[in-house]
Length: 222
Image (tube, rainbow, N blue to C red; front, side, top):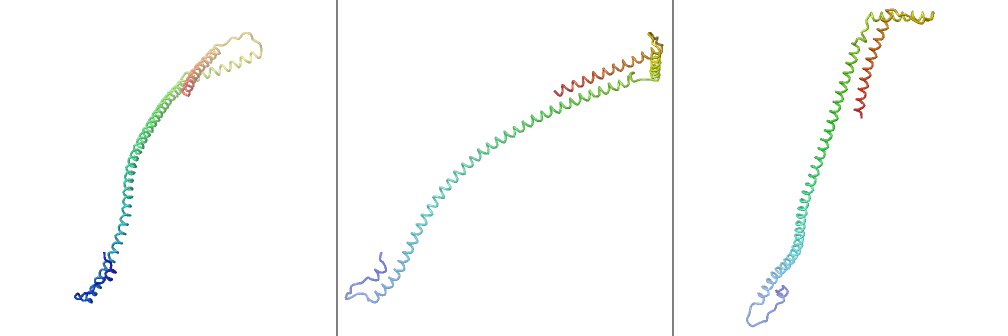
């Protein structure tokens, strides 16, 4: 390709007949100037093309890197999703097992609490029945003849005490080997013995009932 300098330095041989030298020189000057402008523009465009090629190569490398990164990201994302699903499944299974265990423990505790509550209610019923029986026995005892002391009995006891006092005075006054009891004294003694026997019987019944109640209470505590 011709350069502007080569065009400017081009010379022609003279001949007898030919073009006007001035016109040829003027034309060459114009062509040289235009060609120089085109030449410089061509060089500039080539430089730009080279720069663009370099940039294009750089961007292609970046594109390859991005594609690799994108593929890696997609692979990683898929692996992450698969792993997350597996972890979610494991966590869900563990949560279900833990919930089942908690529910089972709660049922056991509820059953134990129900058993304890039932046992306490049964104990309460037994204690209530025993206390009612004890109160009824005490009430029956209070309503029995053992506590029905009338005026005649009080007089008999009083007479017995007076006779006993007189008998004691006589014994202190003189020794007596045999003493005949009067009919009133015999009656008073018999009434006193009957009263003591009744009290002893009632006391024995209360004692037996108390021992039975204490025995049942000890068995429940064991």
